[in-house]
Image: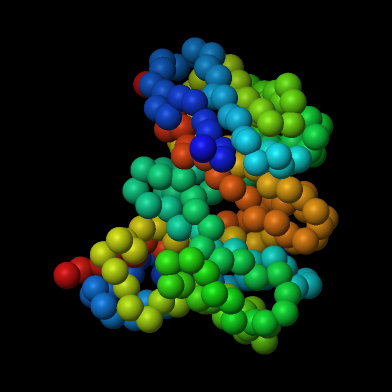
Length: 114
Length: 114
């Protein structure tokens, strides 16, 4: 009964390719996120969707396109992959009730661009 | 703009000894404060959180944290560490109206020696 699940867990691809990472949550949350963790383990938010609407876009290159077909899913598509895109990408979800509910994180997808 | 500082990049502690991880934040009002733990190759797990009320909060795995408004700190403590506590620990800040967006500190790696 994984709460937030991401696939794949590992992704190795060549520069210039296009790839997608999928995320699903079964917690009934209304908000989902993508975070990027760089090689120094620094975590930074990329996107947030609330009820399928884009709420936060933290100046991420437009090669990155999130898509939320429904409240339980938030996928991340990356075009023309670059070496600098290598990182661990975490999906998360929360219920934004105004009381600071915590975010639940997936296991992460380690993307390696060669 | 809010920010989070974890002054210690790396801490080594003996098994059975006490542990304290420091976290300082910068925010205009009382933020929502979180501690997450990331075990090797894993996602982030919430240890504890503070929104309001009692400034000493208890979390899972025997951890506690104390919110000190005067020092803008939210330090994490454990009286006696176990080898399984070896991990990366992240302090994070959220705020009302930010749609659950979390700002993370740089993390503190904890190594536990026999």
